[in-house]
Image (cartoon, helix red, strand yellow):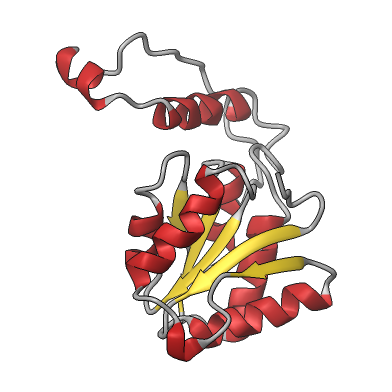
Length: 187
């Protein structure tokens, strides 16, 4: 698997996110990242959902640990990528949400919207997402990692039919108690 520890990432964009993708790609390459760009040409970039499927499949197949996606809003492309097994996609519109997608939700795909995300903001969001992992920055918050790991695992292993058969309740739920939020924790 190509990992963020080894500075490898896959990305793709439709026509509306292409400009932002190019800025983020150039930024990451300048920082030593190996970027696999599945949409190198704006004129032949597939529709947003097909790019989402294409990039999401690289996560599903275990080829890459994390991916970046770009469309007009980030919404449609992230929905499409989420249809692929084992994809946990998020849309971010600021650096804090991009970091939180990695640190609290263990997302492996981050989507951004080229209509309203400025290049420098997109670069900072990519850095925050790619340079953090589940629990980073929350070590002083008792139970934080375990709490969010349960959420990730229940999403990863979600079986709708079992959920439905159990009266729309998670079968065999696990719980952990979160300690008090540390003082001064901004995000």
